[in-house]
Image 1 (tube, rainbow, N blue to C red):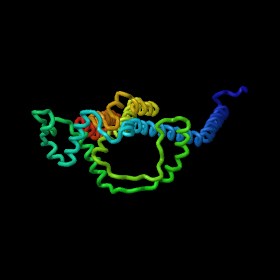
Image 2 (cartoon, one colour; image 1 turned 180 degrees about the vertical axis):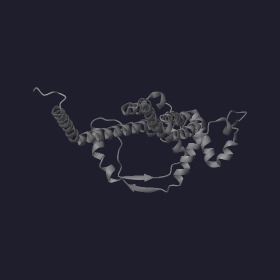
Image 3 (tube, rainbow, N blue to C red; image 1 turned 30 degrees about the vertical axis):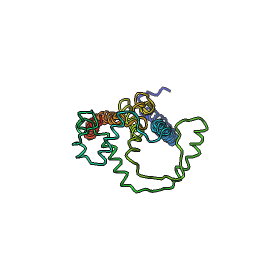
Image 4 (cartoon, one colour; image 1 turned 180 degrees about the horizontal axis):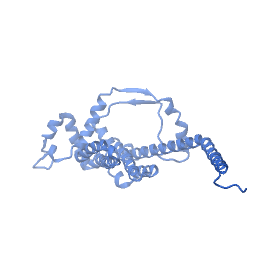
Length: 276
């Protein structure tokens, strides 16, 4: 065509072509919107399931001593920590801080309340007091959980480890101080794994990196050896508090409006210092 490219007619045709191209792209995007959202939703569900699996693995692998030997405190320091927890549960916080134990550091004795980090004992007694306030009950397993049984059975048949079982009923009974002290390491092992994942996500901004951090922390020997069932020692609680402090601090400096997280970071730091 001999038509000048800057003529009004040429500009009109060019604008129409651009509109048709953009309209086609919008139609394609609209057609892919639902599949894209379903894919994202499925990916989130898979990531959530993997995270829950890692957290359960962190808990379950730490229960082996309890399955083999029962609710028994292991090693020397955990026995002293348990004895201090019993004293705190029986006599209260004021007497605990004034307690002079003549059976420790014999023959001099030991002012226990001022020579230990009492955060772990206070945690155990707080859980014990809280459980006492909840009356014993039996509850039928929700149908939503029972519906997961075939999936769990399939995972077991395929050789997956650390797959939870779904009971017909849940029976709650307040635990003794001894049993709580034995169970605190597995509980806080899962908590430490979760906060390690949050810390890795905050550093990398990658959900998959956070998931892998949860899985690694769940089974890494350096943490596992200090947080198995019955190993009622300071590391079991303090590692979770330390990792939580790191995550909260990084979260508090993400943006200027994130400063409220700093308050919780300070509280978590105080708890970590009290526990270790």
